[in-house]
Image (tube, rainbow, N blue to C red; front, side, top):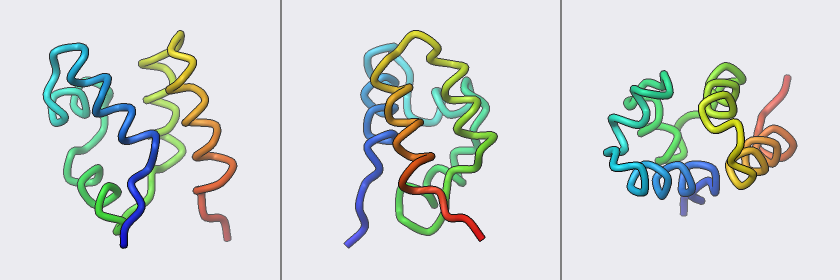
Length: 79
């Protein structure tokens, strides 16, 4: 079973709250929606660049910032 990332779940909530569709928020933040679909399905990973764009787009949102850090600490695969 694929675990939904808390960061993506929260971004979807923010999209709805801001009146965006998931695709339009992804475009606004500068993320490719196909890549996000792969990430949501467990077939992809968020890049550092994507995490940076998310953090910059939500600079005062403590929840989003915390999830970005948690993703960096726990979910980023390293070589």
